[in-house]
Length: 101
Image 1 (cartoon, helix red, strand yellow):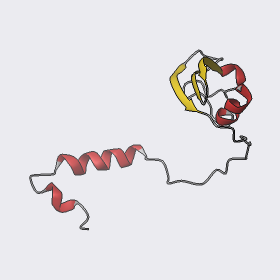
Image 2 (image 1 turned 90 degrees about the vertical axis):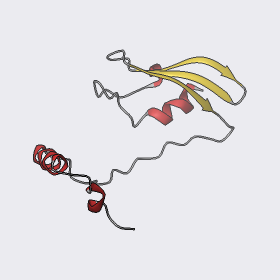
Image 3 (image 1 turned 180 degrees about the vertical axis):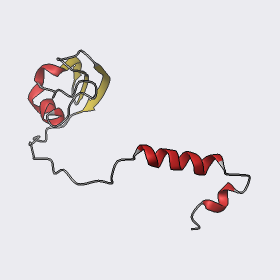
């Protein structure tokens, strides 16, 4: 059972310390037919990611590589300052700046 769950989390990492998850990161709290209650905990720093209810079926879970896609450029400090300057000067007609659909 933990092997199936491990596949769900193997390409993820802890948002706090950036270490990857493994089978030991999954703490099964309760298991019933078709339902699993589990807690994901980083074994490196101890951060808990809460309890999850996972519906299971008899389907085989296969590990497939994740494709990383390029996304938009990150927001810079200058972008934040520009947005602040724009927002602080808005008046009661702020909706005029929204795109028309």
